[in-house]
Image 1 (cartoon, rainbow over the protein chains, first blue to last red):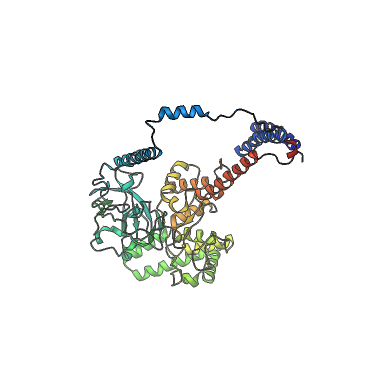
Image 2 (tube, rainbow over the protein chains, first blue to last red; image 1 turned 60 degrees about the vertical axis):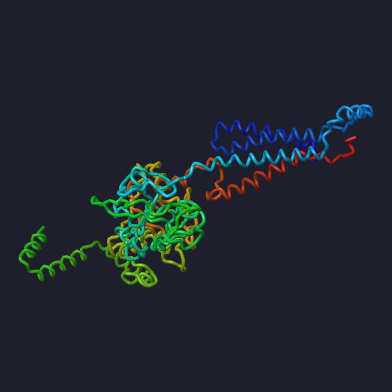
Length: 276
Length: 255
């Protein structure tokens, strides 16, 4: 096809797209169709203009003649004479610039050191769980052991801190005889309910995927897998330490309450963390 | 009325043997007076169960080495497993949705028979008339999205297990799954209102309009980014090359 023919066609497509847009805007609903029609209107116009400019317009290459722009011999001599005494050698100039660049880079690297403080203090070791804190769901409802079905899982928080990121915990109910918790935690599982920090000890993702038949918690980020029956010990993936377990009992009113805070830091391990 | 009075009198008189005999009679009478269709259903359910289920689940649903006990699973679980074709299990490994193996009437009979084993949950009634989308979304994000994804498209849950897409499930099936926790899924203790809210939100996920156009499976930013980079940036590159190219068809005209 000769260029002029498809350029004509492009403008016609543009017109049809615009008219179609007007009509469809009044009768239709789909934003996608409107977008396609607008695309045809603008695209046809653009293709036409570009085709016109690059395929039809005759633009010859023109070279303008002019005198040489080089400095004359006398001008060069005069300048050399003027700056001669204080002339900075190329070597000196390079050394100065290199020194300046190094000093500036040093300053730029030092500034981020300001972001190192303040020290985290105890904030990595503590959550909002306190002795006697009621265990509530996201909506603040206190939980009885019976509120969690066997093999069920529920995300809970300390009462008054619903939605608190570092305190999020999962309660899972398991047949008590299947539990094989580490020594000293036998009392932390009233009616087979066990509570673990929901924050992965690898990179801090929420460990919310529970395979009820396998009794395993899975982290969706890197597939760290924790065996709930043995106290959420890692059995697969990059997590190196178990999910911290929340000591828990049933109070006189029959609700689940925390006995204390977690006894180790929740979330990813850090470089000066105390380990057993 | 008379039976109660008689029973009470017998009980008070302490003639336990006589009372047991009487109870048995009542049970027999009750069986005999059942409507014919119910009797047929129960018999058909038992027959089907023995033919298709008992190899793994035991003759009375007590379970074997090959399959779990069905004594407390209830009608909700049986209805879910049979209607979604997960049972009977064709191969080892995770049960997945396929065409149901039984006709509707046979499923009803089987479900009724399995329900008679114990006091498990019945088939839930779903009523979306007053269901809240907002509550449903909050519950979904907290309890379901971790495994089934924010769009309900499903996903891997590790160790060859799969959380299936929720888009193929009927309203009742969604409710049944929440209550019974089939396979690796944990069961949830939602109130009836919460079940309705959640089902409402899952239906919304399936039927909501897609204002952005094709959702490419609704499984997240990886395929979306792939399309954006390859198709979007690729076509921009081609177009800019087209715009910048000089005409070469009639070079002799340039002079």
